[in-house]
Length: 516
Image 1 (cartoon, rainbow, N blue to C red):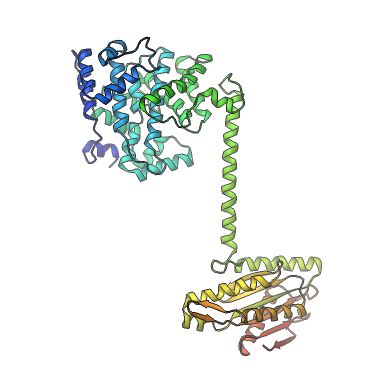
Image 2 (cartoon, one colour):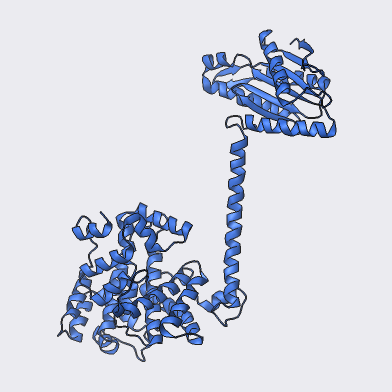
């Protein structure tokens, strides 16, 4: 069942308007109410009355003299204006929720209040009715609070999907909830018995469905307000400015300097009202300041050079961030793909690739190279006597010690279990035996501390060499020769070095054991 149906069926408890809000709505709903009636309701809540007076005397309403009573503010500003001020305070104060990941109620209400200001200023510019427009714009996204409070984890998924796909918010909401915040918000306000002129335009304010003709102007004003508020309270995406200007042009025939003034006024007027509502302004600043920061002059806003500078600046910052993240991810993936998880040396796949490269290099430059294969003697017994963690520790310590004595050009890899290989570039058969003996002595000298025990380790070694002049030699035969030499060492008592030499025929002509 969708959230809207659950709301309607009573499965979820709908947020109810605060008691003072109900009193205000009941009062103005009657046909015979007076200024005194509305003033008495507001004055019954001293904190609310003080805030209403503060708002009435703010620069937002441009009164010529100070208002000292609620009744006088109603007489000067009108019942609808005072009602909207009072309801705005009540709703913003009461409808708060704890932050959840990227959702923050303060940011939500900052956006909502900016939308309300933008809607009223736009209505004045286009000479449209604005009786309840402030409260309608303020509440147009109230459905988000309901949906987020109902299923916060799923609504966080909505935010994540929108960030990744840039698809319209209602479309993503319908994918996850089977309804969108327009429907939920409209149903909520309808359940509060607010006028249809408030809750019905909210149902269509994203203009993603056929809007009834009677609400076309209101939804257009809400869309303009939402875009301007999103620009100022989001990432300063200039597309929001373009969308607002497009609607002003196509729906109302307004463009040019009047629009420039509107865009600037939305920010300056909102900042004045934030202090009244005790909402932190965040990063909101006038459009002219944004352009100055981008080192440009305020002129033609529509597709202007200044907007492109802001756009390019954002794109550059985003590209740099994505490049860094991609580089980090690629580095990590390369490490995961090429290294052994336990010992952190190269894995078998990387060893095979390195062998291919070394054979190509050897043929190109006519240089001999050698291969050492070794495994740890009696590792099974170590695992049995001391436990597998101790066996893993032996492998790690051996690899750490070997890594310190081999050359920077040598390639050290784990080929499986307790089997390891070292590719030694430009190393002939005589020099590799010296290196193998050094390797064997290094491992024998280790005292590996496992809990309270000292573990001694030994290795068996097999050696083979590659010379490009030997036509029958290839990677497979070279590895086979080293493995056979290693097997001879194991079968001859372990802790030994064995070597196979190639010739031009079968690849194995002589074996030599080097005693420990």
